[in-house]
Every structure is written in structure tokens, then in C-alpha cells.
Length: 76
Image (cartoon, rainbow, N blue to C red; front, side, top):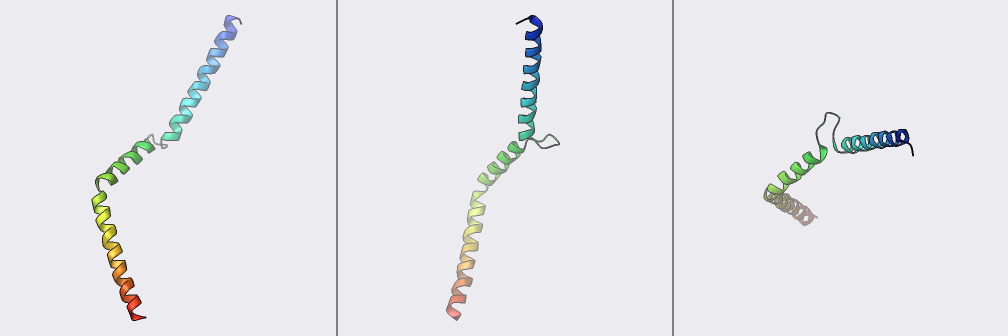
């Protein structure tokens, strides 16, 4: 392999590597450059911090549904 071939190969590999990096970056970011995965992680963390609120809301909803269903069943 001549030096010119080696340089050509290196350039092509570098271009391919850059294309891979761009693709990988595009897979993880919105068009305006925000990282989608970081946003998702932060949202999950936020939800994890607030889980007692969600749990309480779920229990309240379930209780109200059970009450309304119970009254519905008792009328029939």
C-alpha cells in the first residue's frame, strides 16, 4: 500500500467516523440541539421525587371510583 492509498483510506475512515458520530448525535438530540435523553432522564427523576403525590392521587381516584361504582351497583 502506497502512502497515497494509506492517506485516502485514513481520510475515508475519518469521514465515515464523523458520519457515525453525527448520526449518533442526531439520534440523541432534537433539531435545535437539546438532548432528548437528558430531558427524559430529568423528567423521570422529577417523577421519582414526586411519586408520593402520584400515589396519593391514584389512591384517591381509586377510592372515588370504588365509591361511585359501589353506589352504582347498589342501585341495580
